[in-house]
Each structure stands twice: as C-alpha cells, then as structure tokens.
Amino acid sequence: MGNVIERKPTSFRLRTDLIERLKRNATSQNRTLNNYVESLLLDVVYHEPNEVTRAAIEEAMNRKDYPENEVYSSVEELFKALDAE
Image 1 (cartoon, rainbow, N blue to C red):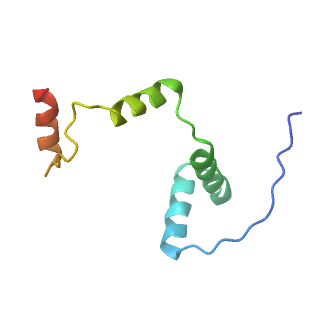
Image 2: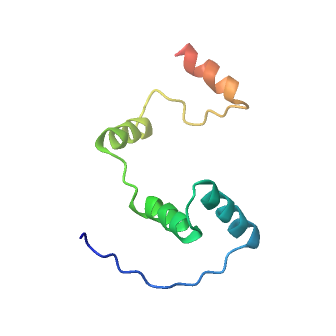
Image 3: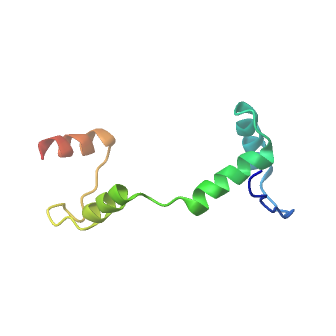
C-alpha cells in the first residue's frame, strides 16, 4: 500500500452561505464536503507555476513598452488596444 496521510480534525467558523455553496459544489462533483474543501486548499497552498508561466509573468512585469497607468473602461477597449500593437 501507499503512504498513509495523517489527518487532524479541525474546526472553522465559516459563513453559512459559503458552506452551502461549498456543499453544492461538492455534490455536483460527487465528492464529500471535506474532500472538496481539502482539494481546494491543497490547490491554493501547493500551486506553483511552472517554468514557462514564471517566465511569462516575469516578462509581463518587466515590459518597458507597456503604458504604466493605462486604464481601460471595458474589455472591448483593452482588446482593441492589444490588436493595435
């Protein structure tokens, strides 16, 4: 058999509307609430972008030709600006 993952019971106080939404999402994926929430937390905590994604983020953050304070009033306006490049 594989490795046994140790688990510790834990309590959280969450908004009732959030719990209900999580339950619906878990049910739609045929999962228990616990399994669903654990998978969400694991994804958030352990998600590391790969090398290509890190390079793209670094490139985007260091672009010199991109206007620093450009603000778009709509997605369409943004797409028009991108198409013009």
